[in-house]
Structures are given as structure tokens and as C-alpha cells.
Image (cartoon, rainbow, N blue to C red; front, top):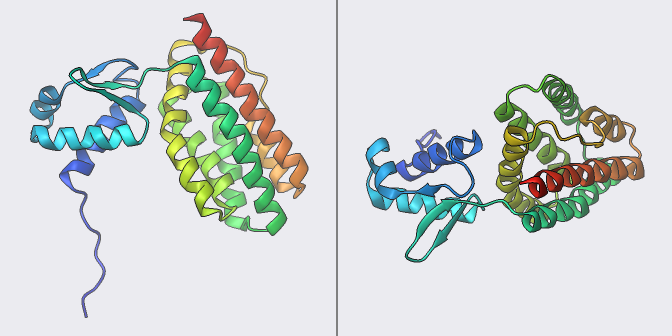
Length: 222
């Protein structure tokens, strides 16, 4: 009998991850050109592989491609931020209400949410590593929503994750002094743990709306 085995990542997947990581860490900034030859030389892969990796990152909303101009790290605009956060403020509270009403948060989910909430509050209080902050934030929100077991909604939210990460990197790297009145991640966790769908829904919505307001202030200062 053939046993299961871990399939190694393809070269394209590895190149995609390398470029994604550089964008997520702020090493490649919004609007920066992404030249196939430079990546091909530095990563020792074909230009065709780089081209396919960039195409995948276009699908993730991290890269924009223009005919006869090439590929660029996605530019950040007030309109895109407004659309992103108003969508999240509609969809994520819906999923948390659904999860609580159907009782689908497992004990291990709640424990992981507690750990992440404490970690995030500490990172934000001490202005810790932005990459780790963004990574934990994306995981926190994904776990909240995935417990709803609503697959179509989760497919849509996954398409917004990378763009959310890109905005978070921007706001923390260049505008870390902007105050946000959003409820803390621990407050969101406590609202979910209370089992009250309305409380959890409103706390999460307030958090997302406030984060969106802070982001728009940042973008309008540029």
C-alpha cells in the first residue's frame, strides 16, 4: 500500500512565497515595480516561473499588472481601504453570530483565540514586530470566521486577507502614531466567550470599523 507523503512545493509556489513574504515584510513597498529579470537572477529561476508567480499574486490582490508597463506592488488608496473595511464589517460579524448561534466554536478554538488576543494586545502595546502583529491578526480574524463553517463566505474572506495584511503593514510602518479607538482583541475574545451573539457581533464590528477609520486617516495624511 502506498503511504501518504508530503508533496514538496513547486518552484512557482516557492517563488510566489518569497515575493509575498517580501511584500508582507515591507521590503517591497506599494507602487514598487516587480521586474521579472531581477527576480529571475536573484532567485535563480526562469522568467516564466517569475511571471507565473506574479500572476498568482495578482489573484491575491497583492500585485497589479498593466499591459506594456509590467507588474507593481499594489498601490494603496482610500477608496480601496473603505471598500475593504466596510466589506469586512459586514461579513465578519455575520460569521461570528452564525458560529455562536450554531455552537461551532470548539474549546481548542477558544483557547487559541485567547492566546492570540493576548499576544496581539501585547504586540500592539509595545509596538512589537509588525510582521508578527499582522500574521497574528490575520490568524485571529480567520479563526473567528472559519468557525462559522460557511465555506462560500470563507472563500471570499480569504481573497481579502492578503490585502488586509498589506494595509496593516502600511499603517504600522509609516503611521504608527495614529490613534485607533477600536476594541482590543481581548475584548473581542471575551465577547465571543460570553456566548452572546449580539455582543460578539457588535464588538467585532466596532473593532473593524475603528481600524478602518484609523487607516483612512493615515492614507489621507499622505
